[in-house]
Image (cartoon, rainbow, N blue to C red):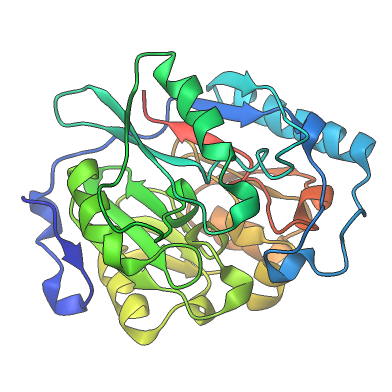
Length: 299
């Protein structure tokens, strides 16, 4: 199927005809040495400038790193950089793509916030040094696209789901779909507390997903229900206070998530997942948790 952008339920393809796509096999993390809160670019950061406990942040990051290793993933770590305190949220600077011919590509992001734009060359250089094709979206100058923060493949089906409305502009989703070589379902986000798709949707596989209904418009909710036969709701309170929908299932068996999100954990277990709780409280102050802190790699 030629890459297209799907904006309405009537446009959804026959899902059984789509080729497969793998779960992540490796993960990139960024050392938290440069992490801090120096400005406010999302609602979660308000009142938290200068409030990071750096020792606690490192301990929490190490526990996430260990959880990734325990899940059987190859873990790579990029050094932190004090000039870019949000570099640690490495989900945002690019979108990894395993191409149909088996070659590796990363679609470089265009960050919405000026404070974060210098992060993209750092992460892109890491990929390029490992032989990955770093592709840049042509045209649409000045419009943002924030990597796996707003776009993710569905393991089991070669289809991309992409959020827009706060950090990614829908005008360039067609160009991104062409580089991803996959049909792309565009989901409109409507609540600024869920400024990235990864804060309100976690795709497990071609059958299962967790989501926050209040974060999406009506068309998006209908499309998600059509895409995922087992679509489970994450309670709004936990999704806001604990960013519990910012967990991650690297393999379709486990779900790594912020500790203490009891209702979300119950929903994950009902989907057949083994829950691994990790504390990410220092990063919650900046509007990120498990998913934001890692970049899954499907190779």
